[in-house]
Length: 374
Image (cartoon, rainbow, N blue to C red; front, side, top):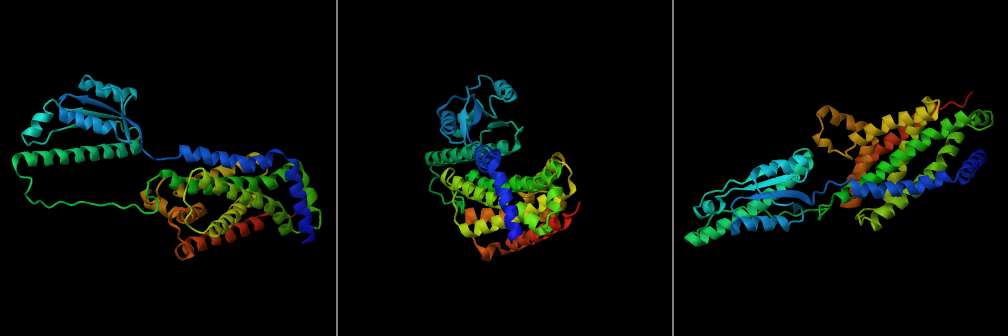
């Protein structure tokens, strides 16, 4: 323990002398969290809609006003010609074009179903699909109101007709804010990127400056040297985790319904996993540039296959099987379960068990790959 204490004192002295490193560790992740929290959102709002109203009746104006007052859309200047809709989509002034035909009101009075044209810019497929579904919902609701009015007029309003009326109830994220889903994932992402890079560069930096050889000729054992190098970065990253969680709660108002102690315990396990991966990278890298490139090549698949950006169930079956090899996947499930659902060990124990196994395996492999020899 005495030798380990000397290494720890050396590392903390280096961190204290390096004015930039503590600031980067503490403040850069918070800045990334704020940027990701605002930018990485799939909420659809203020979609520009262009309308060509060929009917100009009271009924067609009701539809236009309904769209104008919707939270999801905003109207751009009305098209004066049906061909203007295509031009507005082409120039990007509108993402959706609505074509109300000239005989819209007449068809309603005759009991016919008017054909309303809906042009959608599919460049951004996610926004296009969600916005089109919202607009179709508005049109269906208005259609029911028109049918009710017509039924009153022709005396068939009192006839009983079977109607299915769904009453959706959203659990865990009742306001359907994508930020509540993204921010817990950003917490794990920052821990992944920060810890892997710090661990990968710590040993390589010593090798490049020539001080690693000096440490190797000391009575230090291999595990004491590694622990002395990793513990300071682990403690700083855990402190960083607390700051990130605090920002998520107070700034973004993301609910934390589960145990805070369990969240930090699993964050510590995830940190051990990343430290082991960083040690493996440092064992095969000779320069800091090599370590950074290798870390990037390993981090990017972890992000893409973890479910952070894309739903795993939407991936091909072979790729879905590959996601089981990504530790980040399990931490994401744990973090989102604790933040949004408030579940505990009784539900999350499979993910916790697998993540712990990854931590032991990768840390063991990293320690085995590091040889205390010249």
